[in-house]
Image (cartoon, rainbow, N blue to C red; front, side, top):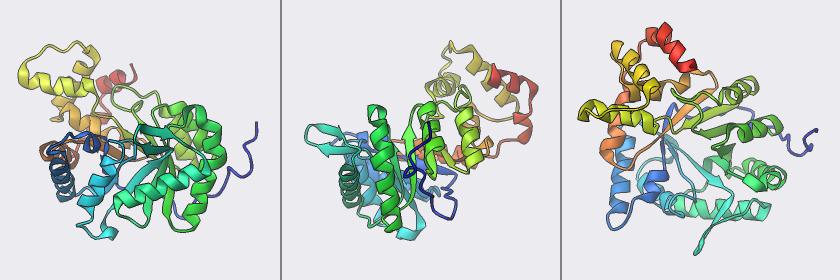
Amino acid sequence: MTAPSHVLLSRSTHRFRPPRFGLGGSPIGNLPAPDGDARAASTIDAAYGAGIRFFDTSPAYGLGVSEQRFGTALARHPRGEYLVSTKVGGIVTPRGLRADFSAAGIKRSLAESLERLRLESLDLVFIQDPGEHWQQAIDEAYPVLHELRGQGVLHAIGAAMDDWRQLDRFVRDTDVDTVLLAGQYSLLDQSARPLLDRCQAREVAAIVSGVLTPEVLQIDRSKKANVDVTNVRARRIAAVCEAYGVSLPQAALAYPSRHPAVTSVLIGAASPAEIRADAALVRQPVPASLWTDHELRKLLTG
């Protein structure tokens, strides 16, 4: 079936390419009281001090709390120095997040996000997880974001989901600038490669999150605590990486960007120590010879 003509609205004339790494805002929104605000601020400050200039959030993260915390922390820095993305498709209410992918709902959601973030415009706005509202997201949400982009309210349009097949439909049927994929492309799971290949062909920037999977973190902790790890494939990948002087988390953070479509990797962190440690791993070079290692190549495709 041919997509409706109004869906294929052209994206901005310049290809959107966010920074290589960013701070994901879900843990920031979930930090509990009474010291959650202070801890969030110190975590964001630590990320900024480590050179991170891409910050992703959503009304869904803590029902607006993540956006408020980012707004407070980032207000201390010059606006031109950093990029902020948030998401639409949900309205924060006293009873929780209410799905709304109508044109009016998108405008309301975006206005409320801007207020919480203390911003006049956004660098990137994602349509988040439409699910059963897929057609409304295509027919109403995307066109209104295109309209708002023309007004300067936002710079780029994206779609964010944890299902690569749904994202693939968005890339195929719209002119989104970028997609955010949660999981499904990491050292242990390359199932989303067809999506990334389509992104590459259509010059859509792909952002990946969730690369520090439980298996990767379990392996890393087991080295320090002498704990047995049942994921044999993860242990074998870790052993190959160690032969090149590379830890499994370091390899996991570096791997997604080996696909030409992947421009950015989002890292979630809930403390200054955590984001500093991850940023340090990002700065450590990974030998090119690791990726051509015959055993590793077998394990990645196995």
